Each structure stands twice: as C-alpha cells, then as structure tokens.
Amino acid sequence: MIILGIETSCDDTASSAVKFERKKIKVLSNVISSQVEIHKKWGGVYPSLAKREHSKNLPFVAKKALKGIKPDAIAITAGPGLDPCLWTGIEFAKDLAKERNIPLIPVNHIEAHILSCFIGQDPKLPALALVISGGHTQLILVEKIGKYKLIGETRDDAAGECFDKTARILGLPYPGGPAIAEKAEKAGKELGFSLPRPMINTKDYDFSFSGLKTAVLYDFKKRKDKGENYVRAMAKEIQQAIIDVAVKKTMRASLDYGVDTILVAGGVSANKELKKQFKENFKNVFFPLNGLSTDNAVMVAIAGYYNRKKAKKDIKADPNWKL
Ligand code: KG4
Ligand code: ZN
Image (tube, rainbow, N blue to C red; front, top):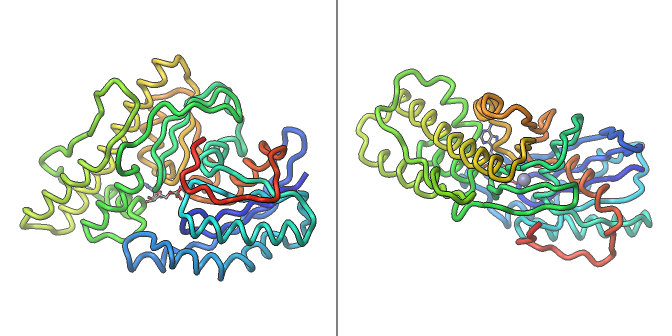
C-alpha cells in the first residue's frame, strides 16, 4: 500500500509518498518546503506566519510528492505542534482524502520521529528512544511499535530550543542547532569555564535546559571581548553541555530499564558531535538516516502505516497530544 504523509506541525511544509510491501519500506517521494528564511528575522517560529506559509505551500508540495502516484491513504500530523499550523495541514488533508475517497489517518508527531529510526534499518525492540527536537526532549520506552511509555521529559526548554535561544544570544542565525555546531567545529581556545549541566545527576529521567540558557546570557552580558574566538568556544561548550546531559540521562535510563537498543530522533539528532558521542557510549544506537532527523513527511507516512486501522473522518488538531 502507498501512504501519502503530510507534515505541518511547525515550520516545515512536507509531503511524502511511501510504499509498504510486507516489511519493505520504499520512499517514493520526499518533498520539504522550509520556512527558515522567513523565521530567521524573528529568531524563532512565528505561528501566524508559519500558518500562512503552510497554506501557500501545501498545494504544490503535495502535488510534487504525488506526481504519478496513487496513494491508498493519507497520514496527517494531528499533534503535538502549533495549533494554527496543525489545523492548516488537517483541513488540507481532509479535502484531499475526500476528493480521492481514501482514508485519513491522524499521526502523533513524536511517534513519527521515533519511527524515523526504522527507515532503512531494523532496530531490535524493546528500545529506549530519546526524542530531541525544537519542541520536545523526551525519553520514551518503546516496548513495541504502538506501545510507548514516557519516562522523562524536559521541565522547561527543549534541547533544540536551547540551541536556538543560545544561538540568538550569540548573534547566530535561526535555527540555532546547525549554527552552533558549525561554530563549535572551528573552536580553538577553551572558554575558560564550564557551563552548568542541569539535572545531570538527578535520579529521574527529566531534563532542564533553561538554566543553561541563563548562564550563557549572564556570561555574554558581562563579557567584554565577544570576538569570533569567544563565540566559537562558547558554541562548543553549549553543544557539549547538551550532549553530556543527553548521554548521561539516556545511559541511566538504559541501565535502570535494562534496555540496550537506543533510538535518537528529532532535529537535534542531526548533530554530528552528538552522534559521535552517542556511538562512543552505546553499542546499539540508531539515528534517522538520509536527513530524516529534522521534520519530514516520510516519518508521518510510516506512522500512518502502523496506525492505519485508526483512520477516521473527523480529525481534530491536538497541540498537546501525549503519546
Ligand atoms: O524535529 P525538528 O525539525 O522540529 C521539531 O519538531 O521541533 O527540530 C528542530 C530543532 C531546532 O531547534 C534546531 O536548532 C535543531 O532541531 N537542530 C539541530 C541541528 N539541526 C537541527 N540541533 C543541533 N545540531 C544540529 N545539526
Ligand atoms: Zn519534529
């Protein structure tokens, strides 16, 4: 069967057709229209602008993804995400499903991120998933596909949000993750002090990143020489602080729950240094392949496939949908 995935939960308008043949997954198309240039001016995602862009881009993004393809169903992200953005995608998908007389499947964005690790690879379950993106930082026990248990999450900012906010303090563009990674790679001299690693030693599996952001702001304000060397060294330290917390918390959960397959998904999982250090610390660690870490609709189609029995006509946006 062929599923057309549609994703509009944040600032990427994406659509992808994926073919499922028994256990084989074939990506037929993968179209993404990024709004980065629009949101750069604001240093983050501006919901009403994002909604406007989704409405504008959806028709041609879906058309391109559908070229010469007849889908059997449509999968649409219904949450979590930005309410106006989710609704735009849902209304569009509803019309398309009606027009073609095919089922419409609501998809959870977090589940889609987790399932992005199953495209082109076959991790053994049970697994522990770390979903680190701009909107979420969660540790989830994946007993099997469809059966999840949230064991920890951020109490304030998400890891990606921390990258984005600290990048902004340093005068780097949005999205902050890639911008910080690029500066960190060029760092020479050490910063001379360590940023905090919030909650790294607590016994739970929760995260907190707002203290890290405040520490960066505090140092930036009092610092006199804010030249390129400082920015590079600070970028490296920010990145390392986030990686340290992510690795340590995942390690603790993995040991406590006796699960050694680790899935790392969501936009921040695109970070090269984070990947390297997870590989050094975990034997069975999986990341999404082929640029599927950041938001895309391939993962939405896969989540749609596993939830195909939950198709319904009246889908509503659920901005806080918990897995
Ligand atoms: O999954 P995603 O595309 O959207 C959400 O669901 O939030 O994640 C976007 C986040 C942004 O905060 C961005 O700064 C971060 O992922 N990100 C990265 C990298 N690429 C994207 N963070 C660190 N290193 C990267 N290479
Ligand atoms: Zn996402």
